[in-house]
Every structure is written in structure tokens, then in C-alpha cells.
Length: 241
Image (cartoon, rainbow, N blue to C red; front, side, top):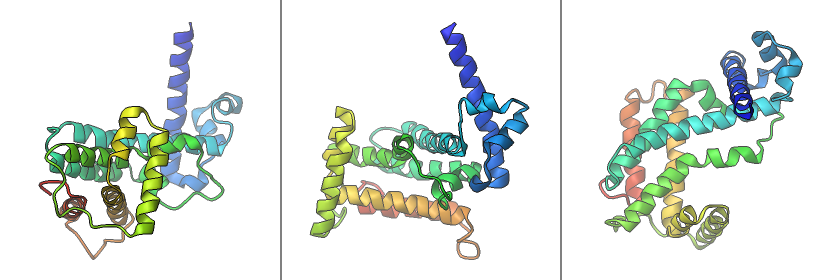
């Protein structure tokens, strides 16, 4: 019976979040309402409030689902390539993020657009939010263990920035399983910083396209993103970029 109850609960939560996702597209995050979602479902408010007691709980579920969606898209695209094709894997992550964003513009705006007034993201969103950048870290780490990063990789970072990155790598690794912790701490600070720069460039480029900043500026959007992937890969030291 427990298994049946769990399945019913999962199906009910999925139904609620699907309706909430539609409301997100129609009214934006600020206009999301548990009561309005309840009305669309034709259910008693008490049934929905049991799982989502307020708007913030519903927003958190949508945010986690969005991060998981873009992270899964990037992982699936990257995992389809040969492990030694570091440049191809790097480019695949960039392409997958763009494709997901174009297919899910409202979810992308929820996690990478303007902050929702009055909402503070809980700890539940932290791990899903790091999936894409950790995938880029994995590619850089694999390149480091394989043929090695190219000699004209990332330049030396200023001492204060280097110290900051070293401290952050140690703090991040402390909350990870041993394998991922070793991957993170093995990265030179300059390489880690280059990955952060690449992550910023990836989502900045996709966001500029999605939110209209490139209108009348760049029309060859996929070609531009491929160029950003190559330049950030080269700056990180990924061979073949």
C-alpha cells in the first residue's frame, strides 16, 4: 500500500506542478498563486495546500524542476560523446542549454531572469543549480587527467582572486561525495576560474538571446553560441577548442 500511496502522491504533485508551469507562462512568477492553480485543478484548496502550503513552496518546486531539466538536457547531450572528445563534450553542453532554454523560455526566465519579489530560494535549490557548471568542471578535470589542458590555457589570476577561488573550491568540496570532491579540489584555481567564466558566458549568451538583447545585433545565434563555446573552451585550456 505504501508504494501505491507514493505513486498517487507523485502523480498528484506532477499534476499540480504542470498546471503551475502553465500559469507561470501565462502570468509570470510574480503572478503565480496556489489558489488559482487549485481552481484550475477543480480540487479543494486543502488537498493542494497539503503539498504546497504557499506560493513560495510551489515556486521552489518549479525552480528545482527547471534546474533539473536544463541539467539533464546538458548531461544527456554530453554523455552521448566519446569521453576523450573534450572539445565536443564542452560544445555539447553549450548547445543543449540553448536548446532547452528555447524550448522552455518561461522556466529559463524563472531561474535566470529577474528575481521574484519577496521570494528567497531555500537550500533545496542549491544542488540542482550547480549541475551544469559541475558538468563543465568534469570536462576540464577529464582533460587535465587525459592529454592535459593546452599550455596556452587560463592566465594567472590575481592573488586575492586566486585565494578566493581556492577557499571556495575547498568549501564546495566539503559537501560532496569523495569522487566529486577530488575532482573539484584537483583543479588549479585558474582553471576553476576559467570554468566559472565559461558558465557565466554560456548563460549570459543564452539569456541575451532569449530576452531580446541580440535583436538587430546578431542573427546567427547558434553560430555565435558555438563561437562562445570555442573561445571559453580555449581560455579554459580544453584541447581542440
